Amino acid sequence: MTGKISLEGLEFHAYHGIYPQERSSGNKFEVDVTVETKIQESAFQDDLRGTLNYEDLYALVKGEMEKPSKLLETVAHSIAEKILLHFASAQQAEVKIAKFNPPIGGVCKKASVAVAKRRM
Image (cartoon, rainbow, N blue to C red; front, side, top):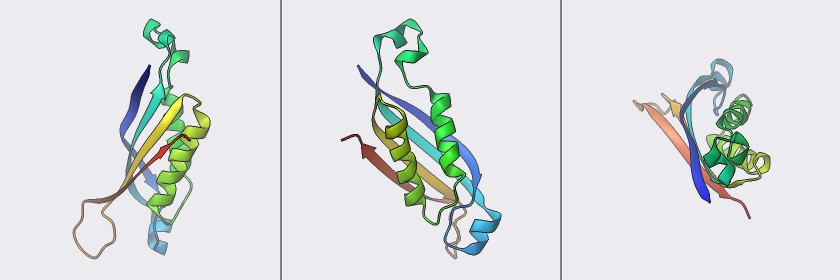
């Protein structure tokens, strides 16, 4: 059986951006992750080994968010790739990253990028 496991509204202070100030002082980011995954029958018997552990998923996202990058596309793609590498049951990973108050010269609550990567 397949299902989707999501972590929504993960918040991080990270150092992603083109401008030096963004990379030195950082900014607030929000990450949403959805993983299409195989769920084994044992998960329906309360056995964690039959599903994707979202504590491990959070740790993976956190680790990638801690690596400074210029583009959110780069970070989102890296998270999606790592999910497919780390979780054998994962079939597809969707990652959305939003940067709060982006430096665009006007009022903008947040700018976001979303990517999806499917296992080949």
